[in-house]
Length: 329
Ligand SMILES: NC(=O)c1ccc[n+]([C@@H]2O[C@H](COP(=O)([O-])OP(=O)(O)OC[C@H]3O[C@@H](n4cnc5c(N)ncnc54)[C@H](OP(=O)(O)O)[C@@H]3O)[C@@H](O)[C@H]2O)c1
Image (cartoon, rainbow, N blue to C red; front, side, top):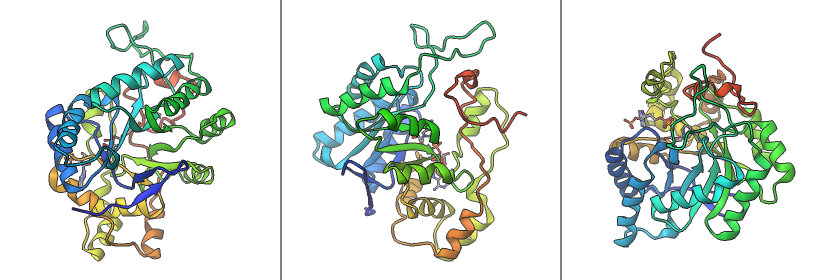
């Protein structure tokens, strides 16, 4: 079993540097994958209600906990307040639903999934306007939602609280009123989208960064296609410099991409449902990149976002939506 290193968060909690991402996997795939991940030594699992798999994950966790194969305190479970319900009154009922589905009494980290919000109908479907676009919920108030997030810590429902997809201005604004500083900001972060200014700002403020889509979200093409989006996305695994560095260390390109992230103190949550690739992604603590290799990887930055949320058609009309539109000019 791979031995994993930990990042100490601003409240003293310890978060494994590598976790398993769980977006875009069926219940069946994720049950098998979580089993394989726990066998391989993963203890950090990243999920969200919008991934639709909390119940499946909960079933595996219950089996492992009941069998005494893992202790609750060894696990680091992250879930999120969804983009379709992130007002203050949504916080407590939504985490309670996640906890019921995960069959847990607390999560280790609860994140506001996005700084923006969209309306849904009573049946959970997106509320569309007359143009067929998703309707932005303009009541968004991060400070008010954060007050309710802070209560979760006091109530013991979340050990740590944080944010996701917040830009520098949004983080700074939240810090002006927050009594509990966010433990992490989970953002897209990889060699082609390094977001150095945001990463440095969060680090200086004691907010750890979690890198999502650390391998460039290789499965997002199908998701985008289903939403009618045409995207010419790069494959980070195929970047020649990454391949060269991998060969020099006898490692895979994915391991180099992940090692580069954790070398800078950033946590990474690669998703895989393949047992071999899950082991590969965790097996990154036994080598180190040279300064010259790090410099080559830093030079790859293209400010290229793969997960731009354009699949939420109309979301760009929300004032807290800040991702630039780089695909349709
Ligand atoms: N907060 C947010 O808004 C947000 C947004 C996006 C993602 N996330 C979180 O971050 C996690 C990771 O991001 P992601 O799923 O977008 O993308 P990712 O982890 O960058 O890439 C996953 C893709 O890479 C493949 N893969 C995994 N390991 C590999 C390896 N060693 N070699 C080659 N290919 C490999 C996977 O296929 P196989 O499964 O077939 O191995 C899958 O297609 C998500 O699952 C989710 O938990 C959060």
